[in-house]
Length: 165
Image (cartoon, rainbow, N blue to C red):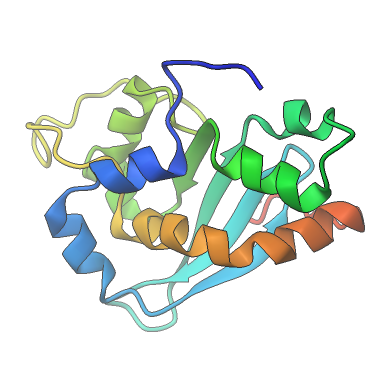
């Protein structure tokens, strides 16, 4: 595995999440594993904490998985664990991720999966507080508990299409 001082791991992102977001994440009731895309992006469906029936799509791309997959002496489970502990790209489809500046912050940190957001959040988050929304915080905490589902999907080559399309 390469060592990159600029990478952000799951633990780094969770640790950098502000207390207000951590507290708000307690209202998010469930994260549901959807599947994994061919580019090793793990997808989750997360319920809105305030609007019944509304869900958001969370994506966590394991950037180090292709390199871990080349390690023939490792099991798929160990490769996934290694990749989840490595460099990630993340995204949430909720409005807060875009309008409260998390899309901008993750773009600046080179964590954002998707089109870069270059518009500074002058109105809603001028001090750039936090790193992720409550949905992604909940997903990143649930990720280790879903490793075997990811392993099963990779082993059986059950890849999904982008759930946002």
